[in-house]
Length: 169
Image (cartoon, rainbow, N blue to C red; front, side, top):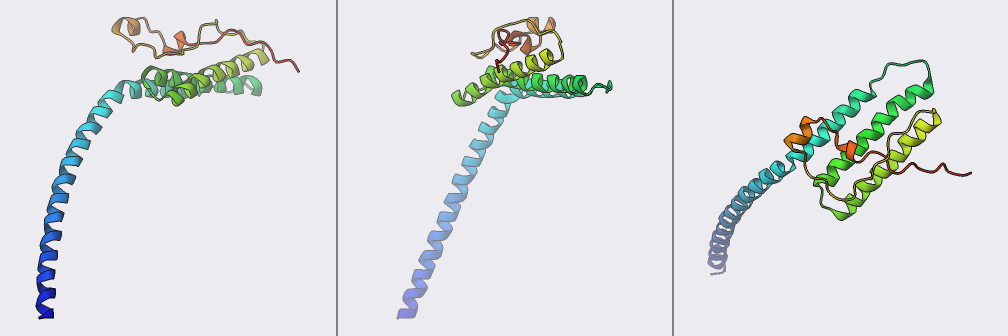
């Protein structure tokens, strides 16, 4: 009798496990189909940001490819300025599309700090500073056909903060 109870229990257990597996598969399939759709929508929404970020990185890499002049100070600055500008351009792209308040604050700090670093390097070499313009604090509108036709760079609207005062030592 005990053997039959285990056999019945085993059959019931197998039926339950089988039914649960089918239900889990159906739920999993529906969830993965839903998440695939959500993932596609997220990628489509991210496309403009990724395009701006890629353009900023490509420009940075091209601008960093400088021919050595024999002046280490000038060569270092010639490579580092585009590197810092690339960080600014990527942060501006994030400010245009990103939503996380903490990351937006970090991006704003990147813009200001990298502009100050560029200014410090240029001042060290006696080079002129770029014109002062406000740093972005709000998302900028995405470029339109009119704005891109004029070949404006996103960082043109977020170039340098007011000229930093030299640090007193």
